[in-house]
Length: 199
Image 1 (cartoon, rainbow, N blue to C red):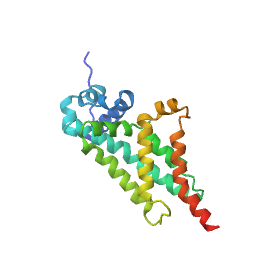
Image 2 (image 1 turned 180 degrees about the vertical axis):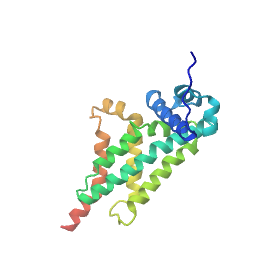
Image 3 (image 1 turned 30 degrees about the horizontal axis):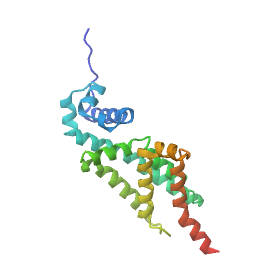
Image 4 (image 1 turned 60 degrees about the vertical axis):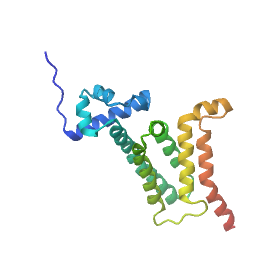
């Protein structure tokens, strides 16, 4: 009895490949995200994936776009909710950012792209962060530290935590979420100073 593969539209095939690449990234790390491994995971051919992505670098770039695109909107929504409440508690934004770099795999993927010299695949991550800063800063003057500097601090902390956070906190005898706490304090500091100046 022969097994026939389900016929997918080009868009469905591309989406399935990106989802399989995400699973490989989270299960085995960025070095596992190869055209051959993704093709095997979704029951397609290497040539089929080459048609969709052009190269392994193209697949990795598409994966980076997928990871960062949806998260950018979630972080922007969280920032706007925090502003609407007026509570200046950025922990939700910190958690979303740390999660995308840690559990979401963006930290491992970005590091792999840097180490392998695939700077082009970093573009979606950097463009997404720039777009997020522009979206958050639009029609909202920012006091204290510049929004760009706060974003740089938060992203570098999230990236560092994704790559080295767990062994570092063990070595230093700190709680696992120590870096998230530091990031939250840093984001709150300009607001606290602004409030002190009002009195």
